[in-house]
Length: 211
Image (cartoon, rainbow, N blue to C red):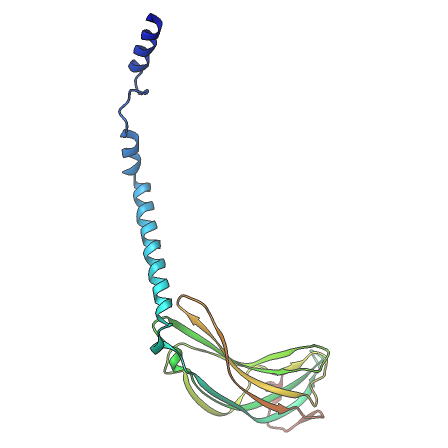
């Protein structure tokens, strides 16, 4: 019995051992600067995430639903030539366009990326889509637009020189870019027209514009 008693007394007498009051180390760790900063950061992220989620969900309310409208049509095909540097068919177009996308803007909408695409098929490529014009809209005022005789910003090109006589189609599209949430791609209208059967130039486009 004596040896057992000595071992027990020794265990109680060791400084900082099992006899140390519980909770001292835990209290020191909870009061450290890193622990406090971690608590503040986690609270901030939680509140920010909740606010962002609610901000996105409120855009699904009935009175927040968008009703955009747009129209696009061809004005004129100004030329259809061969780009000798790229060895591609190249065409320059002008078009009429109007749109009202103001209903897309709410407290969660940052901007809209609007663009005009020309598509055609029945070539070496199974699918051809060429962006010929684009714009960024950042407010509801600029979202209302109406213009005639607009020139494309980027030439219509075909890498295999198969553009002549093709059935072409304008696509008016835009992508929503909210502050938080999902980005959606939308297409509002199309317009069909046909490319010329032979190469030509009508003389209204300068050489600098064609290049």
